[in-house]
Amino acid sequence: MIQSIDRAMQIIETLSRDGREGWLAAELAEETGLPISTVYRITASLIQHGLLAQDEVTKQFTLGYRWMELGLKMFEKLDVRDVTRPVLEILALDVEETVYLNIPRGDHSIIIERIDSPRNVKILDSVGERIPLHIGGANKTIVANLPAQQASEILERLLPDDGERSRLKDELTAVKRQGYGVSYGEKTPGTIAVGAPVFDFDGRVVGAISAETLAYDFKEEQLSVLIEKVCTAARQVSAELSGMHYE
Image: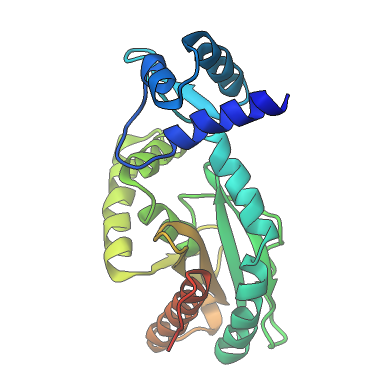
């Protein structure tokens, strides 16, 4: 059993190296020193568990999407809440609105943290709620910063209509350029939401911080201030997740 694990890790570590799109079985055998029959046996098992994938045309092996799921679970259990919660608490008091942290999961995001507005009027989207990634300021800023192919595949699944999908792609281009997203009543009618992306140490988008306010009680001149404060909070969390000092 231990030998099988060690051999599987040899293959996984080889596939995880930068600079290669994929590896053939013979190349893995040569690189790891394992018999070709062993490579086939181990890769077949890893594919069954979603840890490896094989291109049907080229027959090359790559790491599977299961690693992303496992990484997200570890990400949730580690320090993201600990890092984010103090920042969200300050942000909620500063802007006097309910604030959130969302993380991507498949074609949706999940709210994993919420700090309520200190005012009597509150907007309470629930922790654990799943929201399609094409809806809302937070989600748009997540999709806008995903790899282009991944984002395109998500939008194709969520938006069958080509015209609607094309309009959203144009909006997402602007969202990425400006560094934030704004939505007007997309998930909850009568609300305005501002979201900004959170990045990890490798520059990958891992979530978004957002603030949500009631539209009837909101003046347009307040929007720029809300955007600035949400973006500042997101940059601070990104810096801390990256191990950098934030000024």
